[in-house]
Length: 88
Image (cartoon, rainbow, N blue to C red):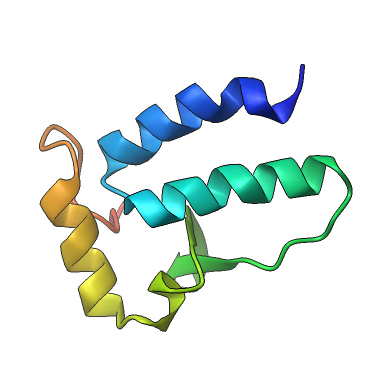
């Protein structure tokens, strides 16, 4: 099973979790490059010193933590806990 088969799931989850479109696209392309054996730098958003699972695209990595958190929470499915979850 190739990484491209995961794109619909990654896209759906990215939208539900409220991640910016640019970061979801970057995540998919990053997965394809990793599958080909090409190392890809990525910056994980950390909360209390632990990665959250959200990988920022290069442009979003330049934003402040507050900008990122506000953007994600404004787009996030309201049934989910706010980002970043204190349960992490």
